[in-house]
Length: 315
Image (cartoon, rainbow, N blue to C red; front, side):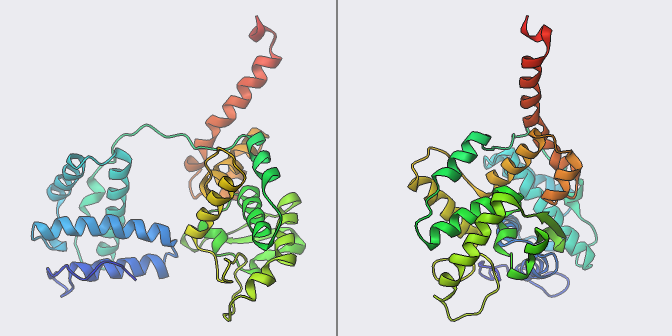
């Protein structure tokens, strides 16, 4: 499960090494919380770095208190980590100790008392509608991989689903007659998103003309929708590489990522008048505050309309 070597030899009260606690925690995130590989890797890095620190000070899991947690916060600051990175690491450790507390390995969670550092909220990067259309129009359609790549872009942009969600899509998740996709989101939460128009057309083209050719390149049975050139399921990293290569191939000076397409999906919906609650549901956000970050973009649209339409704005 974990790529870290079992070097944490300090024993806790339950006879487990600190590395054992980490492996148990990562398995919990994978099998019970259904977190993506990318998310689990971040937890492994953040928690593992902290255990390195604790090991250096010859501390056990049970030794950590509020004072030591604050000392670790200062240690991260002195190492030159950005505030956003420090907040992520502290958040990871809150979750780690919450798990340890639930399992009764520790009596308290000292990281719950550590406040996140104040940071300037970074605005989501997105494509303008003209840029998005430029990407789709320039996308080649010469072979089976081209058709797959176009379907990837269309589905990411047309549904707003996460890269981990598109990689986990299976054929049974596609409700083509109902124009819906069943998405398996974070924390085993499921939701339906619409599938229509150009998005459905590109996906059907890939399914009917390309997927079977890719599938024939492997002896393994798979129900996953999107396959790589070996016929195996695409990974998160594979999707990112495909998008980057495609942008270079069509010589567009734009930076692209699955999450930028997700940002674009939400921004375009709000700009066209969709309500925030609907966008929240489509994105699979548990808190509407997470969705509200996109409203700043639609303000640009409102300002433009005001400047064009209001008599006094032109004076």
